[in-house]
Image 1 (cartoon, one colour):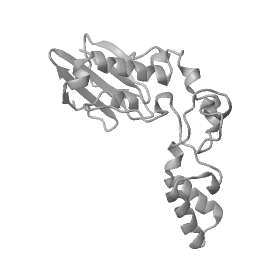
Image 2: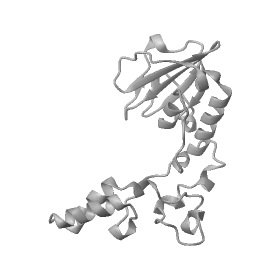
Image 3: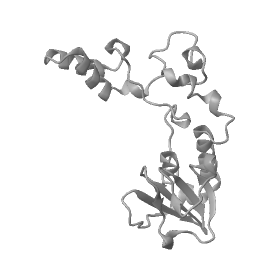
Image 4: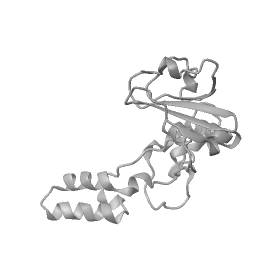
Length: 204
């Protein structure tokens, strides 16, 4: 859902290493596992303040940038296929499930969604350089974007909620073509409700 929102917005989208396969943050179990100076300083400040090592570690874990700096997870092998040597940070244990090798041939993977989004921006002038409108949805959790350029109009909806959200009838494209849904694995957008954290992009 967040990827579809980002790539529906104006400007130049960017991808941080690993987000295209859904890599997750990692909290290391020991302060010695961290390289981030801020994490180490935070830990030692809490120790000096009289906190226990467990409390100090939790505070360091909360602020460390190393949480999102673990090596790219290419496959399920040792060191996630990143290196045969010793990486600068530990490997996230979930690399055996979350890795590029598992996703590259899965048409419904996060990786495939990113590929579809990038391809859509390349072939859609409305997404790459169109005007932006933000239609009112009447909801604090349903966000809509309208992009238009040279006769092409795309309309996207993004449900920032763990509950279903109904697209207002006045905004539902009557003859809209669904270009992409974040729920493609479950059959795509079926309307009029968006499922939890569902995004859908229409050409109207």
